Amino acid sequence: MSSRVPAFLHRLSATARIRGAHSCTAQALFALLGTGSAHAGSSSLRAKYALATTNQFGYVDSHGSGYLDLPATQAIAPGRGLAAHVGRQWIEGNDAFACSDWKLGVTRNFDHGASLGLAWSGTDADDALYTNLHGRRIARGTVAPTLAQAS
Image (cartoon, rainbow, N blue to C red; front, side, top):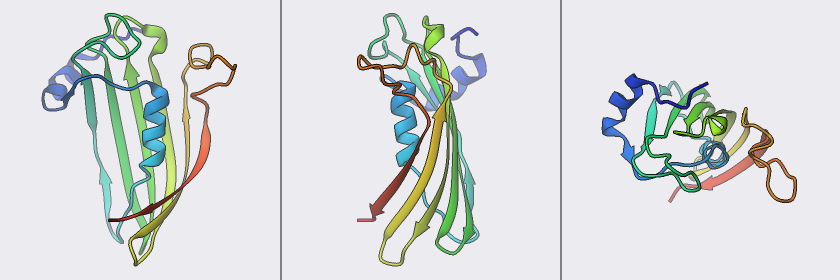
């Protein structure tokens, strides 16, 4: 699969340009931590696209790389919600590092502004490319709790 970013995404990126982008590992972490919150009767589906206008950290000649983020939330009861995310990374000139990630989570919001969440995330990143020096796969699927307090 080519790491070339589809032409329609370049047009979408005109309003979402950023300097640099993140690896699947970082994106999975952001998706995992961002379990979101939902209010009774509410739902949302969004699309975000990040375009690297300079070289991505660690990748030579990678400007033009991108990340498509599709997050969704759905309230299932007052103070309780579901959150889902699917993302796709393209790294220009580095086809092997292209990968997808996903997350599914639940949240519970409390009256005093605190929220509790539990999410499972995963990725199809190549084990050989996303393994640290200690032999640990850094882009593996994981389950993680979150606890947040609104300011």
